[in-house]
Image (cartoon, rainbow, N blue to C red):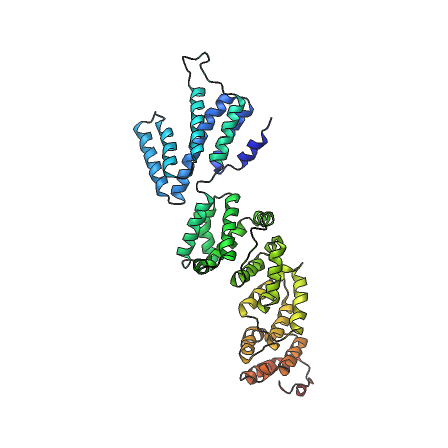
Length: 427
């Protein structure tokens, strides 16, 4: 009969080779071959410890792991037929690393003792070979799975500490996010289980959104990029984490941290829907107070179409405003993704004719009107003329004579020949 508690743990074995070898352990156990099971179990545990040391050496450049492996290799070469190195490897790992707890060492020793009794005849006993019972073997299997085989070579806390130090040290080294992702995957994330990635995500969320000190502020940008990479590894599991532990993710600091959280939701809209009502209300309040954030708040709507249907009339009827180009470009990228060119052109015109200063009018013209002049429809051009005519911050600026001339050249080609420009005195 299957042991569900054991089978569940088997799925969580960290190393793929260990998991493959462990099938022999469990097959023997289910076949009631308890002696064979315990002999194989000990061998698998020793192999797994070696794999962990090799990973520490090769991936994390761990000096202690390097030295242990060198010493073990020397022991094996000195006396190839001796199993002394098996005892030594457990001893050295216990003394020089954090891989094993005291209880783990004791449990390994017990498995080793029963392994020797099962594998070697004892002449002064009635039964030459030890016959472990089912409960003893089951206990050994669970102890080895829980204490050793399912654990990574480096605990998430240590990984996180090394990761954040690495990011802080090398933050200016990466030319783009792709290079950063390649570095993180190669050095830290490639072989991590989802449980470890989720734990690192939680800690990184706190650094990026919930802490405000000099060190956090200095490294917030690169840590935020790392958070994006962690999310993209397994979006489904992170969303589940956000829902299961929603209280932990509350407490986003107002100001730059909250703005960064809103940007995070822009790129990953499923994040917003997984957050607590407390977080959502905090985000919604901030969006209402900032035209920049309003432009990227599509994640708070049922669909992107609903968002655009709300945004255009809202900014058209509202007061004059200026949207920073960075936020305009984010919205533009989505409009292009959704093949909404006409809506993009409408928004270009609205942001220009709602300019609240000479400087913003100049910036809006060169970024949002001039590049699209030949794409505007007749109706859009008329709307543009009307807007210029009715806004002194546009028609009274020094650049107006030049920019109006360029607009009129296009209008002369697009509008009816009898179009009455005289109605628009300030154009």
